[in-house]
Amino acid sequence: MKIKTILPATVIALLALAAVPVAPSAPDFSPLTATLTPGIWRGEFTVNEDKVPFNFELKGDQLIVHNGSRRDTFPVRQQADGQIFVGMNTYDAALIARIESPGRLVGQYTSLLPKLKSGALPFVAEAGKDWRFVEPGHDVAPKADLTGKWNIHSITKDLGSTDQVGLLKQEGNRLTGVIMTVVGDSRELEGTVQGDQFFLSGFSGPSPFFVKGRITEDGTLDGAIELGIYRNIKIEARKRDTDLPDPYKLTYLKDGRKTIDFSFPDLTGKIVSPHDEKYRGKVTIIEIIGSWCPNCTDQTRFLAPWFAANRQRGVEAIAVGFEQEDNFAYAQKTLGKLKDFFGIQYDIVFGGINDKKIATQKLDGLNFMAAFPTTIILDRKGEVREIYTGYTGTVTGKYYDDYVKKFNQLLDQLIAEPDPYAAAPRQASAPAASAVNDAVLAAVP
Image 1 (tube, helix red, strand yellow):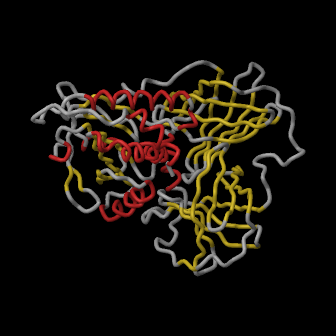
Image 2 (cartoon, rainbow, N blue to C red):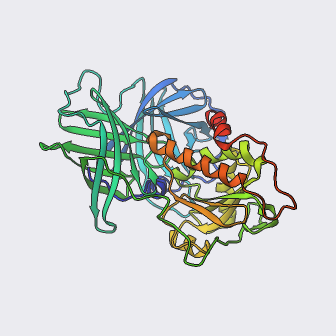
């Protein structure tokens, strides 16, 4: 399967937010009085000439999107004009639809970014349909089992030759999986295999992700990936045990440097630097993110509860947000929403516009910011001990487990090191990060 180099962390999110015309920035809400059929629904986005399906459940004032085993919950509100408004939580986007009947919605996926003037992604949805691509009773026997690890290759005019990895699981006609790039993953995808055709789709807040293709006679895959309205990428894939470049080696310090330097305003306007007294002698985690970026929010979903459970052990953290507008007031809104949604207890600062070249210039000491997110870990002396590019979520299985294991091992090691600025050595008495981590992950929103 040839998959395009659209970095899920960067692109999927950008598409999500760049997909539609501007909706009212401050809609007037009234109580949700219209009767909508509760239970399972099936929706379809129109992306280019394709119909991209997604499934969701309406439960009270909540819309719960289903993608394989993943569930994402969004609040449903009714606007004064009678349309429903479903904000995409931390993403500056929404589903806005009119109620044609208790069991039918017609609307569009819309960006709320003030300056965006792109086209919309129309959608329709109907209640009572729990299927995704193929109506029950119409399945065609699959000609192959796609379960396994796939080397996905694509060639694009703007990005050249690129590689990604697909992890697929097939049970009968049902197909689920995830696509990984050097910056993260696509989140969980769900679909089907019909004869020699396969389809996968995903929608979890950012713009829809759609994969389609054909199983060839030699067992390879030919197809395409569509992301929002911007990309239609031809792909090829071979079943092969292959991996992506080492995420611990993509971004590194420039020669002669031992740390990074920056000074950015927090959400109150106070200037924050990793060299401030607050971080002196502390192990400090620096998370380079954007509220628009799904891999960033997945990484925050991991880090926020981890930090809450471990902060008393001599750990601090700073999230540096690069947003879709180089505007402090806008960043206060978007990063403030992120802080509230995940219950973040560490500092959040605004770095500027979401451009990797600009981020590289502002994060003095790095060779290059390869992706959002990037996690930088400083020891008690303030020196960089690790830089990790991207983030692979729970759906990636062993990749996620390996990341969590290495993260906890390094943090335990650094926390155990003596504070070079303390009058006397610290006495370690708190439990290890790995032990604390297991207890908090189940409570993540």
